[in-house]
Length: 439
Ligand code: FCB
Image 1 (cartoon, rainbow, N blue to C red):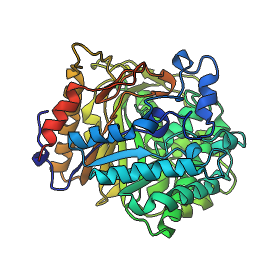
Image 2 (cartoon, rainbow, N blue to C red):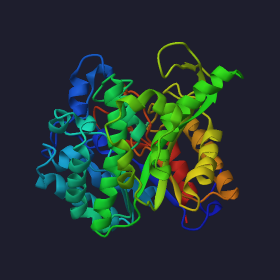
Image 3 (cartoon, rainbow, N blue to C red):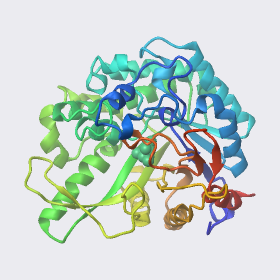
């Protein structure tokens, strides 16, 4: 890497991230069926119909995986707790599931790794999906009960917790674009899900405060939206993309309203009395997490709301076909600081790239990933120099894993996983980070 630990402020947390369904192996330990299992079983949704039944078998190999995290010198591990493992039918606790997260927590602490939990990284129990999932207003209370159950068990040992990973993906991507479970394309479901996600977020924060927990935050994903050309129409289109992707959730949490240009399309579909929920939504937070991967060039088009098109950009792309644009990370950090978070600490909770990595002579030479990480760490350092309070960075991801509708094809790991043998092989990027993080 082109930096050392000492190039960052004292106490800056270097970490890596994963999520439950993507690595654990959901067929183990009495986990319940989730909407991802049924989404994946429906032809056409997921590459080769792959699912998270075995994934990286982290459920049985978590000690080995935590050893890899510790050996690299990471200070913190961002993991998630599967609702369907903790409560297979969405409401009844599963002792084996609770025991698993208890063991995982202690195993992190034994290795000196700070546990940074995300309560929900997308595996909704099917029993709750049957009741409308995120479109049902009761989900805020269901989620509060889940929070109470899991954090009642491990909350005393968490370094930090965020309720919901990437509200935009849970809401828009899953209910409007239909690319993720439950695969809906329904504007009413979208508006309701987007709003209920924030009410559930606020309810979970309240629940954790009542358990006496602190260092609670929220994790949002952002894509830097740029007009594809210099016309007013392209600027308006990019502003709408920015509105429903980047601003909707953070405006809700920090400003207590939603962007006007998004309400133009969604307001008619929001639940009655939505304006009254901001008291719950606007729980004070201790930090904000940004997940950042790419930018989008946006142009107008004349289809129905939210009329816009995505224009292919000229920059080098990752295996996801996402343009590599580190400046967007810098811009988001500065914008959040200026317009939303002020002195609140920021964390980069996800950043990384997919690459068609192969093992050759026992090694994986992912120099593209090293360059990507260097460029994004540079952006973080620039922002810190310009006054932003960024206090940590989590690389996505520790392991190659289940990349949702793209199955096991897209490799994001610092550690290669052979999905036949489940062998782990640290890649060059892992070794490079390990040298940079030495004390
Ligand atoms: C984020 C998700 C994560 C992973 C990365 C590539 O949107 O939080 O699970 O899929 O993208």
